[in-house]
Length: 287
Image (cartoon, rainbow, N blue to C red; front, side, top):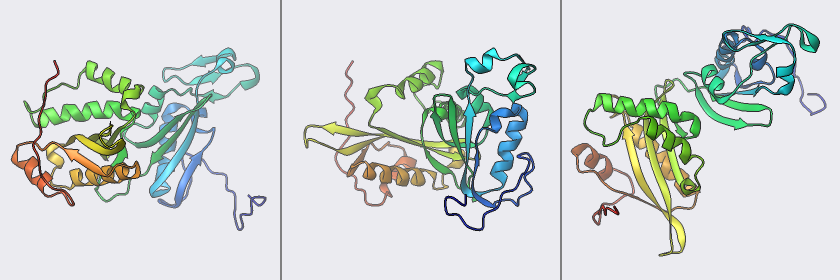
């Protein structure tokens, strides 16, 4: 630290399970090569402790190794939680838990994961500490949120039966997974609203490439929905605001939406700032 020019810094040895620091003390917390050398049950508690001492709006950054030949070839037992307990050789006495995307979901269940990056030997995971103001976080819809989106779509249908025309079944899940690896979705821009670890709304759009103006300056709003129990809390407005800024940053200057005919949708769209209603939408079946 001194070599880097930092002044008045100090180092303290603490247990990651009980750091002793005050809540909301640090701007961020970083754990490198620690969490994956703990039994996963303790690792869950350690992540919660790191979140406790991180300020609202801050992040906890973890590195998590996956398994490789070296780990697999050293003598070890595996317990019911998938923890590796090394009992001989150069790592005798060491504990290791190999992480995959499925294991990361177990570790971060109920938390707001902002980013997962795959490395050659593991992952970098960034977890956000939500500001406790009862407002949802608007986060880009990435592949790690697919299961939460499925849960959300099922909840939509529980609250409003016979309203939606497709089912969030295994076929839909597989299509969502495939969409994140399909070049046709390069211009897709989507966000989800997350509150207390659960998705309560989503918004989906796409930037349209057309030779009419020989530009990609127009975007189409394909879908916006919010749980009925969370409406009238400005969730849709928050998602639309975030989407508009993202589309603007990507070079789009116009967002076009089809307006549903129900009263609730009419009120929402007619009250959007800097928007006007004109022309009619036409649905043309290509089958």
